[in-house]
Length: 265
Image 1 (cartoon, rainbow, N blue to C red):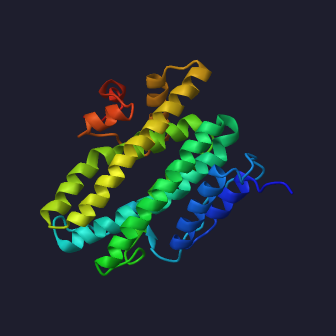
Image 2 (cartoon, rainbow, N blue to C red):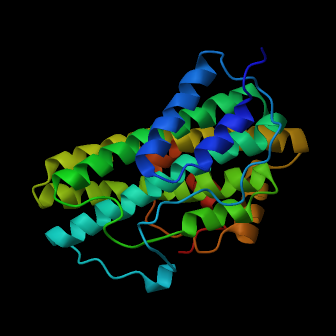
Image 3 (cartoon, rainbow, N blue to C red):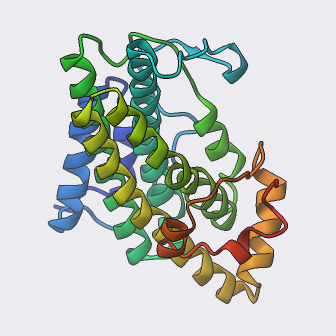
């Protein structure tokens, strides 16, 4: 009997709406892939849009309620927003593996399935923390801007890598240290430790992005810095602005020189 295909397994996870079910299904796909139970066959297309639970309500970014900075409710709202980012990131990583794996090869698939497993773990940690604090994922509205980036870059692996890990995930390297300090100042050491764990993992995720982006550029005979800047201008709906966590970005393969010409000073 032929092994199930990786593409079908990934697609099934992306079409799983309930958060806990998606977390468990993502982990199972990664386990089965690593155990040799899934054939590296890309015989079905990835969905244009992954399944989502009934809650949270998804609003345009401009319609999101303001979070009170420094208050207990503000920190709770921030945790909820981060939980949503990690939930969407599960599908972003799976989509990268399923959409571009045939073109990019096994190491690319290994790396992005590893990212999917990390994102599932991150979501589970924050979701559990929300429940401990008397809330839950879905209790507040969220926005779906992250998946806009996936749709915008679905046609080109270079564009996907340029925007998702090298801009959106890299931004987490910049802002999370200050967020960790905010939770520590509010006496929430447990949440701060979770966020520190996440940012440490994100360095590796961004490094995957820069490594595979550089490989694509070499294949295409392009300058990585020049192509990255071009693709960010074309496909990123926003501005890349300081402050930058230069040490974390360097660890992930993103230099200050690469930001020149893209960053809004």
